[in-house]
Length: 526
RNA sequence: UGCGCCGUGGAGCAGCGGUUAGCUCGCCAGGCUCAUAACCUGGAGGUCGUAGGUUCGAUCCCUACCGGCGCAACCA
Image (tube, rainbow, N blue to C red; front, side, top):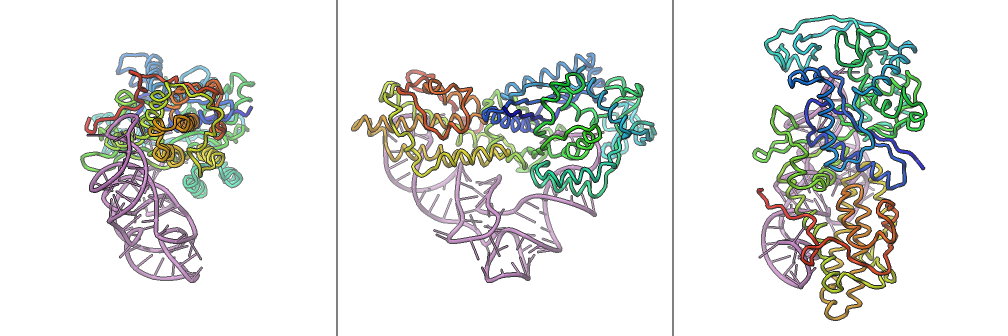
């Protein structure tokens, strides 16, 4: 069995996840679910990035120990991810022992290789934050620290450790050339290659005098600085430094799913670190796009930001609608590799047309007829050619295409294809064959049509499984399909092979003899 | 400034060298009644940012310009 190790970026715990962070996790989750269906042994890792100066600060404000604070935040994050049905297998917190051990081992290895030297870092230091500020932050604060406008910034020089990133320039370029798929999508690849070709500077990887963080093993007065520590979560979660067998079984990772803003760290610094340590490099890095917020009143499209007050929290949408609606919106409307837009107006629009009027209604009309005309029991289903709903479609080719799309993170076109080639033709089939008329004139013919339609639900269930796990399960359990193949064993290939139980039984939840609505319509303006 | 992305009917997106430029929403007109007033069919609406160029032929390739946006080392 092939193993498949995928990761998402670890998040800072100082603010709660918004729809942009959730976008990344959903995209990765679809991949994880898809790979499991394909029979891979999947290890899907997520986590929080806790070794930042803001953690002890924020904890102090709340009157908590840093440890208690990060644990509480990790709990909140996991609650959100679970509410969105993100099927992560492990959640690492970088304040955990296993991460500290691995990081210290790693930095020691790189040090022993001669890739770490002492240098002087100069910059604007804020005594309030106890940290250096970037030029951008200084600019934003108008020469002051944005968080501490009353405290003057001081120009400080500090001796700390540097990683010889520049020494890896040639090797990195060779790696990009030899592995054209390393950076995806393609457009990000060009960006990185030109960046590395242009200039590569060594990076500071430690800071002095911080109490929270991972001490540098060969100089305990210093702690490991952000990226050098954060990137290592992918390895320490897989057992690096603690469990060599487990690590060997997992490493290298198959893909890091990350935001386009941090592709450079994952495509430049990270492979160089691994080269230095003599470890294999992650096979692929996928830099997804961002979600922007469309302001309904002005029509402006803006970045999600706290200062603009346009942040939308996933839980808002999950509670008002459902996790399925949330997943559907982003997966169908925002191409994973590119950018997308969110507005409540459009959310309602998409929900009503695709889910309520589309999937939900299709499900409802099929089941209603089975119940109404046959009392939910259709005999000899397995003797019917159940592919008549899609006469022109080569289902084997369709499924092969979908596998290709989903495997390459092309979710939006995959979902469009499902509508065009499965759900829409099914609705058309009903109009053309008129089973509701056949019910009065030719019951056998009516039964055959409905058996065909049951087959639509069965294959739809399978093809929707990575995207909408709950809806897919509801579709599958609407009839006794489990008798043919248990739900947790279905794969995409099964969608192309009609397989119905001898006697088809409606097993769906009903309300007063009718199927329960899957996606109740949203009243516009609510 | 450097690098990158984008500009296609009212809105949001596909297409990326070759028959009448597709799709979703919205709008109009029919049909149907199994269904969550859902579904099906048809229609109106685009000189594919602008100007050149390459080509037998360009929305799709090249150049310039205009407009919008992103990134530029710790920002999802």
